[in-house]
Image (cartoon, rainbow, N blue to C red):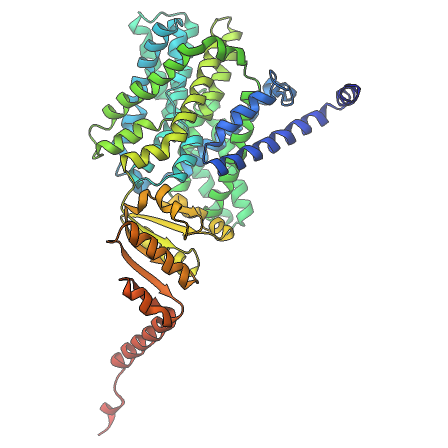
Length: 565
């Protein structure tokens, strides 16, 4: 006890050291949460919320956001949110989006409106929250989160259509939802009552105006980034990455200056433009932004959960949990089915999209901001807002995040796919050739951690990576639904016996799969072909190709005899 007292007295004389120690602890806890997430396949946010609450002000008080000051904490959270949303926009591919644009527009308009109206009604009547506060809560939970959606979709295999719709909705709805929330907040502090229909018109007008202004700010910043690249080209990779980070923060700042809470719309649009136009070092930029996003999520969720009053969750209790379940099982499905009614999506895909709508970093951070603003205006309800939003984040992430793989398997929404075993030179070349022309999905199994890391960027292009021993039958049962959606198997590893074993496993589960295997030793060809597996030996293939090229050259070359008289 005396040692702790002495340590406290010592740290009291060095406030900067307290900041450094708190930051180091946040990084350490965040690292542990990410490792647990990788090992358990659960979203990291679950662990971040649990650890933050346990180590926060009402727990062990080892992580205290107050050391950064309220202004500093809000600035950190704002920049982190900007980075996260920009990275989400960067990953959106317009080539896929144009085929699903109607659904996305429906999800960020009609679905948001249904969520706000529906959840305001539910919380008002079930919990007894005052109408204006119910509307504000409903506005905050109308957003899903790219911070949760993207990691979940990386762990399961779904069609490119479903992936595009969910990821694009998560990015764009953040901007719509937050601007709707700030418009509702202005309505709340105006003192108008829900019965005054005319007073609701400014909400819709402000949302539309703020979105347009934010989009223009984002487009302007993206244009500026491209101009800088053109003028000072060529730029080193490090400088280009720094430029993109600067543009991210600048777009957010400009959007906020033009119209409050338009910053999220600005960074989303800037990210989408840069991600879908010619830009140098784009793959390394995506990797860099991914690392920053991981760090941002860690910092924000630990800071927010560390400052959470846990007694609020207990006071809200079962009624609050029921409200969240109604959001998940009634309001969200209603909004999704109406929003996608005019799109060519089958009912299985609709059910999965309706299931997967976890709330994330934007909802949680905005709830903290509005709680502080309500206190500043002397309006009761700040506690219930924070408590309900955090309960919504926690329940949706735990239930929907952990159940996503089961739902995908139950609904059988995985696309017909080509399965490639081996991420070496042959496997990589195959993927490069298939990913643009292959309408079906591409799955790669590789056991070498270094190779897997070098191939991570392919996840952003729709390739499903599995880091595992391809000889483990459990992989095919649990992650590939007993290979029921596999149409073609190509084994390219340097180990012929591994290739043979994989073919045997797949053939046992689904005999009609078309199989092709690279063989390194031609002596084993007969074993493969007896099982109906087509084979190719690289040396033989190279010799054949050389012969074909020589024959083509000799055929097209002029004959030396025609000049002889």
